Length: 445
Image (cartoon, rainbow, N blue to C red; front, side):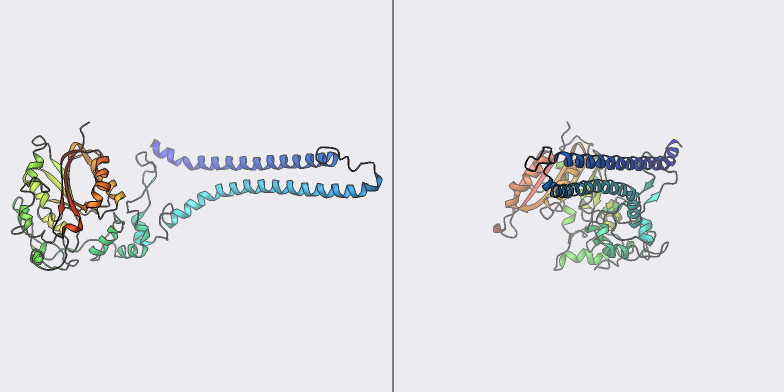
């Protein structure tokens, strides 16, 4: 109640403060005007008597022949000085009045900005569901110290305001009804920086013929039924198509990720070659038994890294995007935890909470250097002291390795447990392409 009473009493105090400030400004105007007038006339009198402060010996005052000319010249000089001083005084008064007007207009400008969309963030007037979704919303109990405010802004990506047409389209639906089938459209908005997207008041369409999922542990390596998802957003319309995609020509994201039985996915991270490919068991062996318990896999495809860690009693959250495939739904069908999150998003974990962070292929030279550096520091942030960062097959050019990336990794502050670099030769030696795998540890002290 004290917080609420405090908030309710703020507006009267604000009005008193504004009133006092107005009175001070008026007083300053009066003082400056009087000072200017005093200086104006005192200076004029001084000039009539003394000219420039000295007696003019070249034109004697008692010479009657020059009296008329002298008087006219002195009167002209006096008028010029009077005009200059008056202009100066007017300028000071206008400046003070302008400051008062600016101070008076600021609350109105803030109100106008909030009407347009909150502190000028939105560059067009919000209406309908979008206005309701982005807020702000007044708190029912008034000002709260936890927020430092009496209103709440729902979280939306900072780049959302750059795409008004797309955002209006995304928020065009019937409240309480079925959501539009716009998964890929929404994901493109996310990848443009509108992440997270505004919440919507609609229900996603349910897949027809949905059945209960396969129980753990069998679900880790079972292909889910086709009725587990809605296929509208994808080229393939069933899992058989996705499994056989590895046999077809064309470029796809994680082309063989959905083949859990006969493809490469089954053998990933099971063998350590002493070079670029580390095994899960070898990595876990670098820490005391049982101390690696929870972690994150960045850009984890269909979730196989998390599945292998699950078999060893480690819970791993997998971030993945749905690039022409239901990666997040597939991960969930395996009994694992998916997170639909782009590489640009701040990791949604508190400082020093994770035992391990893994990333394969996703972190590489395609990411702008500044963004990559922020990402690496973010990984360092969420790891606990002694936590492991497993960088798996980081790709770059040889000219970038020592000039850009080695110094970047060194400045983050990790200790090197393993560090292996090898040239990538499948496209020819002249391309000078390299892989780097590293196991890095956040210092204990």
